[in-house]
Length: 266
Ligand code: GLU
View 1: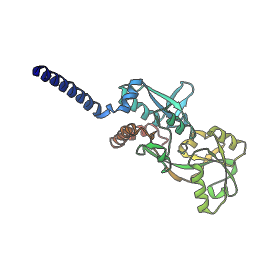
View 2: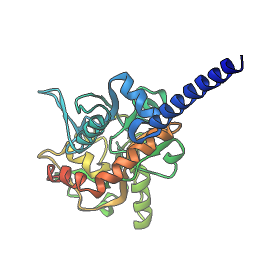
View 3: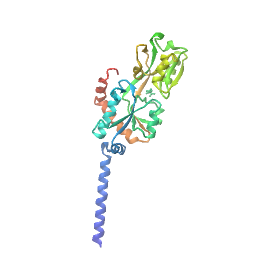
View 4: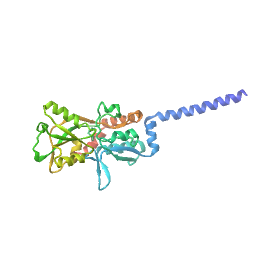
C-alpha cells in the first residue's frame, strides 16, 4: 500500500515538473502568449496608411503596399512566422485606426500614428521610430509664403488628427486668426483646396507629400514634431512589450536606417 502511494506521489511529481518545464518554455523570448495567439491564427493583422508615400502607399496597379511602415510590418511577421508574407494590411485613417485596434480587427497600427500623452491613455505606443512635422499645403497661385500669410483664412484638417491643435498653437504665437474645416479623409481636403472651399490643407509633411501636383506646394514652415510609434490595444501589454523590444533593437542595429535609405523622400 505504502509503495503504491509512493509511486503515485512520484508520478504526480513528474507530471508537475513536466508542466513547469512547458510553462518555463512559454515564457522564453518570443513565445509570449500574445504572440502565440497571433502565430496560431496564422496571420498578423496590421493597420497601415494607403496614401502616404514612403510610409504606407497602396500601388493600385499591383495591389501591393510599399513604404517603410510596410517593411516594418513585414519584418514583424518574419519574427513571428519566419515568413514576411504572413501579414494582412488593413487601410486605416486618422479616425478609424484607434477603433479598429479596440475591436481587435487589427493587432497593431503602423500608420503615421503620433504619440501624444492623451493617446497613451487609450493605446500602448512603442518607442518612436520616426519624427515628422506638421506642414501646410497651398495653391501656388495664391502666393502664400508662410502661415503668417494665412491670417483670416480657412484651413482644412482631418478629424482626429493632431494638425488642428498644432496650427492653432502656431497661429496664436503669431497673433493671427485662422478657422478650420474638418474632413473625414485627405482626398476630401485636397478636393476642397482645389475648389477653393479652403485656403490651405494641413497635416504631417509625409502625408502632404502624397497630394503634391503642379498646382500646389508645401510651405517651408515646420510645426509641432510628430513622433510616430506602433500602437497596440491598451490591455495587450505583452504584445506592446514584445513590439517595443524589437523597435528599439532595430533602431540600434541600423535596420531602420537601412529602410530609410530605401526611401530618399524621408
Ligand atoms: N500623424 C498625425 C496624427 O497622428 C496626423 C494624422 C494621421 O496620421 O493621419 O494625428
